[in-house]
Image (cartoon, rainbow, N blue to C red; front, side, top):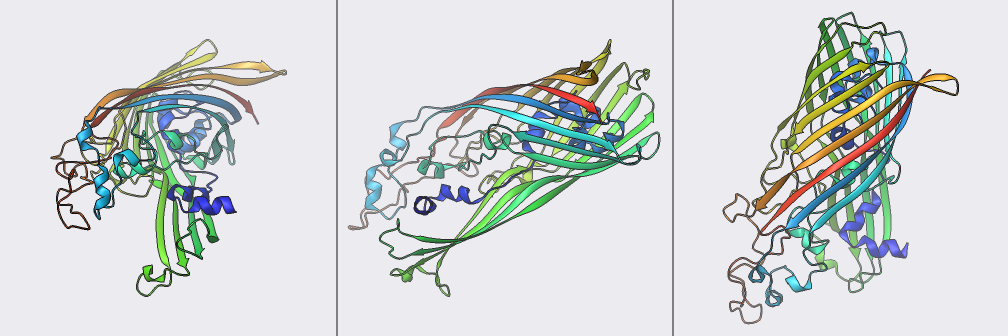
Length: 482
């Protein structure tokens, strides 16, 4: 308790008081259905439990099986800061003023590049089971990181990060790829040409109220805590429809509503001998914070495919199709629950895919482009994100295991971050903050202070940066009839 008490006064330690067992499916939207054929066009082609999340209207056409698998993902991302002149450093003379800035030489960490070298192993479990033939089919899909049950990392996208790591981070990587995701859905084949489905994705909302008593304001290491933490499940609904105007043509539409996993908290700090700091009408100092993890925009998916005639097993010899996914990123909130000052763009991703039968096996391929919603970071903020070229490939085949025929699959995923270069511009709508204003004066003499003229900033992204990287993944899956 003493260790936690000391950490509590550090803002980043507030993360310790949120404990979500599951979060929004940010990694599914990044990777697609990792152990399913046509991972990136699953909204159109899914025939396994992945349809539970991507398009529940496809559940009646999925194989009624229990499945389990593993998928490993390696991420390599690099952010390189552009050199800066020392004349923009905040000098120590700032301490002679009332400006609440820190001298560059006194920062806890010096400005540095970022190497995102992560690896995640996921366990995948799923079930497709008919409840009333194809008129009502139940689906479950779960994706759980094996080597990181809970990983949350907050960071500021502007000069405030100078007080912590003093680095930049990829906004859509890191902890967004280590969320546990669970989805449940029902699908129904209403007739030969129409199927519908709906489901829920589980997220978490946490409320934390912390009463803090500080016996001596001059000794902030000695505090007493009285926590009140409450966590609720949050269900994100989504729905899908599949139309077959002819046996060889299919059209699909899906809608996933936006969501995030929020932790809302308030600390009530009471001090025995420093009560003049209390706001009017209160007998404590309120500290309010919001943390937002895995913020996902509303997504509208549209797909169309053309197939050959059906074979004896009911599957076509080949299929080709195209999927468009519109994403409403303009409503994005970052990890501190803040909306970017320069709003993000809404985007449309496009992925083409296909699959074909080869003997008893089925091979699948996808290739697509996913644009970044983040505008050029020419101003104060440093949201780092890249447009991506994505691809997937798989082979699935029936095999004998312990005298029983099951389906086995091997899956590959790749993503290349298109290199991006950013330069700061003082004419930007929200320019880099001058942390030592030109009109600063000495608090003792009321005279101008040396070193205040011009721009001084500890923003780690100034005067610019470049970013690039890639992701590689591979997985295996077994499916057995129930």
